[in-house]
Structure formats: structure tokens, C-alpha cells
Length: 422
Image 1 (tube, one colour):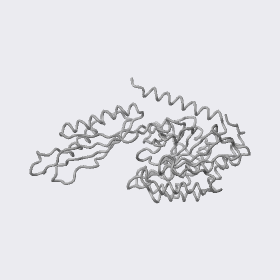
Image 2 (tube, one colour):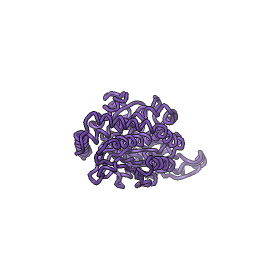
Image 3 (cartoon, helix red, strand yellow):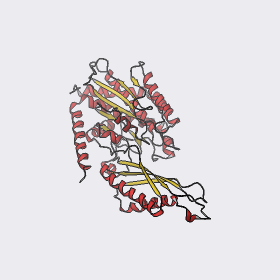
Image 4 (tube, one colour):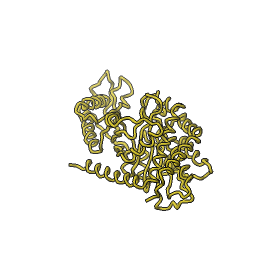
């Protein structure tokens, strides 16, 4: 167990963390805007990756952050700092702040991942400054982990498989939203690409010779629309017809759809996926097409909330003026999916949401604009302060860390029982 700091000292350390974030505010804002102004898609975030690693390499004193620039993936990174006075050996507490920085096609940073990256770096700077103010700092490693490809592919899952989360004790990140919440009910997600193969023919002269792959895609789309009536209220499916033919007077010989399925748990997700795949195959049978159903590289797990960690975050956030939505609003509010869900099955962590000064919805042009605004900076840095302060609680309150670990184990066991076949 780590050392217990008197309450007064802990509050002073939290104040120092907040001060350090304020001192770096201009540079942190510039970092965020550099990422925002040049949006890059999943696994292609080369400029954002360079901006982040260069920022940490230049952080005074130079080279004080040990940066591994290509950590498991070309656009992932790991930066680590430990108090030189502390024996940061195998038993050191390892706390990681996660950064995301990929953007959306056509919309750019409409989910504010530039702000997620800024929060992660800012919180790490604040925590480091607080630990530097301790005469005999505890054995701890402060880590910034760059995790690309959240919007598509699941970079965190790639990194889990590469061992990047091994030996981490607690992970922290925060996501922009329309309100402040210590957690939201992020659900499990599975995506598929469906391809229909038919036979081309002249659509006017001899259509009977053709096998219409577009008809198959349209039937599949309508099958899933009809399925919604029998879906649980917590299930979601949504998709697009990506390819529907090349010319009106040619019977389409090929069509393609992309669909996402979501449910509160992996077990329910499997049930929904089976129903959807039956609908795809039914469309092929009705039209005489052949069908190919290909799953995405990774499923996104539902996020396991850690209430003890969330409560500590809320306590710190309220001191900074953050007004959190109610528990009812959390339970009845909208939800999405994130590859942080997979992380939450491997290591205890927190994934709060934060207001950025707008009521605009994520994945819209208006949210892109808001994510690059100066107004968003106040809320972004306030969130970073709350994360850094919560990390200090984890370090200096052994009973808190013990409770976080116990709840993680309990939630994991509950989820395993839930997903066990009947």
C-alpha cells in the first residue's frame, strides 16, 4: 500500500496540479488546435501523432518524458515519467491517461477527439507537477498512452492484444459531450459488411436474365427496418447501402451494405447479430443472389463503470464547478460505443463525459466547430484538472485504490456470469 498523505497536503497537491495545467494552457490549446485543424482518419493520424509526441519530448526539462513514438501501432505512442527520487520499480503504481486523436470522414473532429488528446496530456502534466512537489514521492509511473483509431477499427483493442495495458493499475480519459457525466451507459457494438453478388443484364432489353444485387440490398435494409419492431428498447441497428450499382440500365451485379449493431451486453449483442444475419441471408434467398457477411476486425465491449472511481471524480469535479447530470439522466440518456469498453474489462478505469460550451450534438458540423473553439478550452482543462486530482486520490488514498480494484473484480465477475450461455 502507498503512503497516506494528510488531507491538507493532498489538497495542496491538487491545487498544484491545477496550477500547472493553467500554466500550460496556451500550449495545450495550441496542441489541440493543431490536431483539430488537420483531421486524420483511423490509423492515419500521423500529424496528430507527431504533434503529441513532439509536445511531450519538448516538455521541460527536455527528454524528461520517456517517449516510445511507435508503441504497438504506427500512430500509437507511450510516454512515461516517474519521480527520480522514487524507486519506480516493478511495484510502482502505474497510472495512464489515454489520448484519442482520430477524426470522422467529411466532418473532421465532430467527436472532439482533439480535446480528448488535450485532456490526457494536460492531466498527466498536472499529476507530474503535483508529484514533483512532494519531498519523498511514492513509487509511481505517470503514463500518457496514445490510442489511435477509436472511430473505426478499435486501436485500443489492438493495443490490448499487443500488451500495452498489461501492468497498468488505473486508466483515465474523458470524452466531449453535451453535458458533464462521470459515466454514461456505453454499449457493446458489432459491425458487419454485407456483399451481395448477382448477375448483370440489360435492364430494358432482357432484365429477366439478370440477378439484381441491389434488390437484395434493399430487401435486407427493409428486413432490418421491420425487425426493429421486435427489438428490445436498448438495442440499436443502423447502416447504409454503400454500393448499389453503376448505371440505371444495367441490372446491378454487386451491392454492399455496412451495418452497426449495439446492445447493452455482449450476450445480447450476439442475439441481435444472429437476427440481423438471418435477415441478410433471407434477402439473398429471395433474390437469387449469393451473400458474403464479413465482421469487423473487433467488437467493442460495453463499458464497465467503476462507481468508486466515478464518485471520486465527481467529488473533485464539483470543487471545480462542474455540474453533473443526475443518475436518472445517465440511465435514461443516449449512449454510444467505444473501444474503451474493451479496456474496462482489462484494467479499472474512468471514461467521463464533459460539456464543451455547446448544445450541438456529436457527429455534426456544429460540433466540429465547437471542438475547435476557444470556449471549449475552459471546460476541457477543467476536466483535465478533475482527472489529475482524482489520480492523486488514487495515489495517496490506499483504501480508495483497494476499493477500485475490488469493484473492478466484482463487476468483471458479474459480466462473465451475465454472458455465460444458459
